Length: 124
Image (cartoon, rainbow, N blue to C red; front, side, top):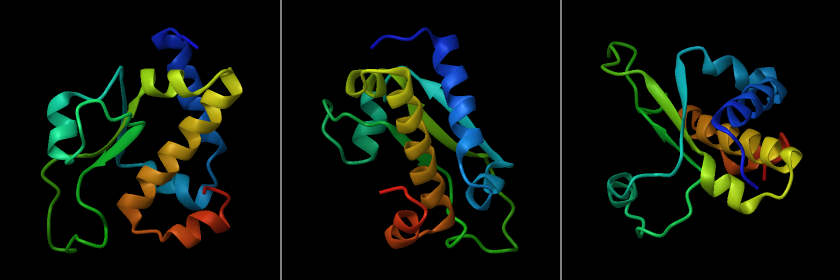
């Protein structure tokens, strides 16, 4: 499946609207950015091989690691990688669901959600 950047952005917006409010409300101060693929540098920083298929990643300091006295230096950011998602999905609906799952998992890194809580919310 191959989507234009505009089509993919539209899918990202629809996917985010489907995320439960309990999770979505934490996106207010998180930038969501779409890139074609993760860079080799990013993969290396994450300890992943250069051919790893990565759908998204969270960049920032999780709420668990923050002090209430610390001022954030940079905005928290979720990166979504369009081409790996296109490669694993056959339909618009599949891409939309995968974007939703990926954003929720990256927000979970920010919030410190357990895998069990994500499972309870239907994101396995």
